[in-house]
Length: 304
Image (cartoon, rainbow, N blue to C red; front, side, top):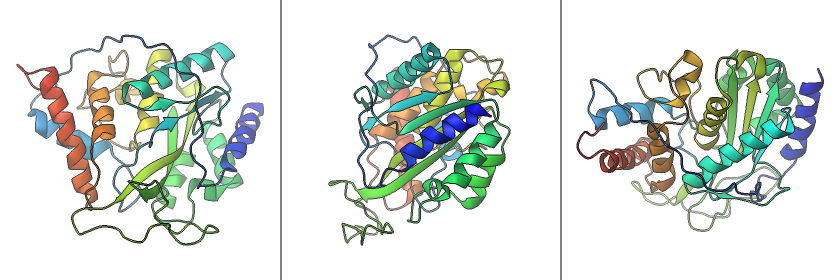
């Protein structure tokens, strides 16, 4: 299976980076383009109820942690698609990154968001995990979801599967805040008070596998926007999102042309929120509060 072999080879090169290495620069930023987003309606619920339900439904960080996000720069790589298609997906995902306040690095970077197309999603996922299992679940607290979740990542028949790796850091300095095997003790020594913390959770890598044969029935823009949504937030692959106007429903036949205004409101809120609450649930509330305010400003006469 040459597609699997190619993806494994590139992924293993990226996985060899130290967890303390800073994220490298990404591909050249695409030209800014205006995107018209559809109006969204959440029936039968107030705006705050709908947002609270969505935020708590979709988020899937490691156990005991709040939502992680990319600290500043991202670099998107796509393999096993035609060159023009790969570049189009990189450009679209990078455009979304710019819209939510992230930076895109320079051409030739080492991707920290790696999208791999294949005709055998389960086979590729299993090959990657078996080759470097600790790259997917490093031996430090707050790195990734459970071993059971990783098994589901390997075995699922979803058209798109994803896996995030994060690390707890000092919010002010960026210093690693947990003991990483081989790198000595944490570089900071306090976790703050009972209600506030100086620790934040930074995304370090995202692996996204697109099963080409299972991805029929959606447009390339829908697929690229779906990839962007799961690249920039720790989305629960088992989340029930049918009651929300989100691109996450495109594989279920939803009439969503692209990333919705609802999706962008969530992503922008995630990256705007001050996540300094010790309780992970309070961090979700902080994201939800900003999302509500963004939606209210966007639609003051009929908040939804």
